[in-house]
Image 1 (cartoon, rainbow, N blue to C red):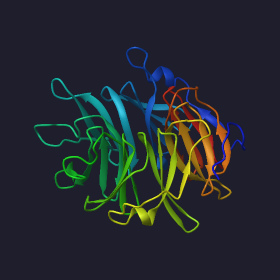
Image 2: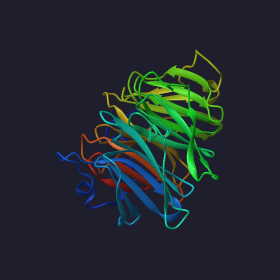
Image 3: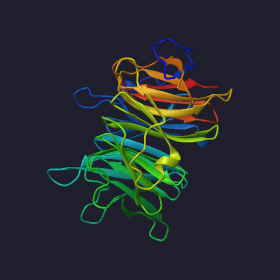
Image 4: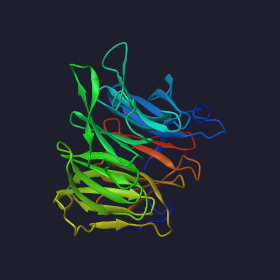
Length: 345
């Protein structure tokens, strides 16, 4: 289990599309460029890219750009759900500090409505540092930030605004910056810069569990369920992917949680992002994007190496891996500024 070696397995997917001009489109002063976040509007076959230059772009699946919007200094997170696009971005807040802003675009209405998230009137931003991850759990939106908090928000129909429900864990959710938040079933999972993984009850916001899963920044968390297995998979910059039994993580204050399986490359390769998918033949896979720009594919649950995908420049981290299950497409973005599309059918 967990065998690996570049090019040692079957090359799983073929690159069918690559956006032209993406590198030129996402530049900052000093020639810092790249895609930092991606979201998919599957029903309309649209893709949103967020850049380190603070620009959001919308493309169709053929790679034609249809919209461009400047949004702050740097995009940190994108999430699309139920006709809403949520954007986490960095912008000057009050004098002498940066603030983590969140904005929502409601595409269900025309013209498109926009909403700004604010803690209160005195601090008109969502967080006190950059927002790194956004997810949806039921009717609530979760935002994770380097200010050490995971916050829950809910749309108030009467006020026509997104209201802050609270911060998981009170004043702070983690001891260091939070880099990932995701939901799976009735729980919310967050990962931080110190490698800690926390489990939260989605409705109450109460902490269920906390484990020191990694020795480096958590870069991805996904839930997976098949073959009578339910697991949480986490990846980090310590060059490991760890698989945890869902039932074990759900036991309150369980201090004896050990991973079911740990994958570590033969040579240290920090992970930048992960995603699961189901191929047309029914094979379950996990796709792992590395800091060095490689994308490796493994089957689940055995973690057999199925090979690498090409397409991004070396030494440019894979910033996002997203799947359109219906179209069997993988979208992979990188700090090199490119968004590649792979056919998984």
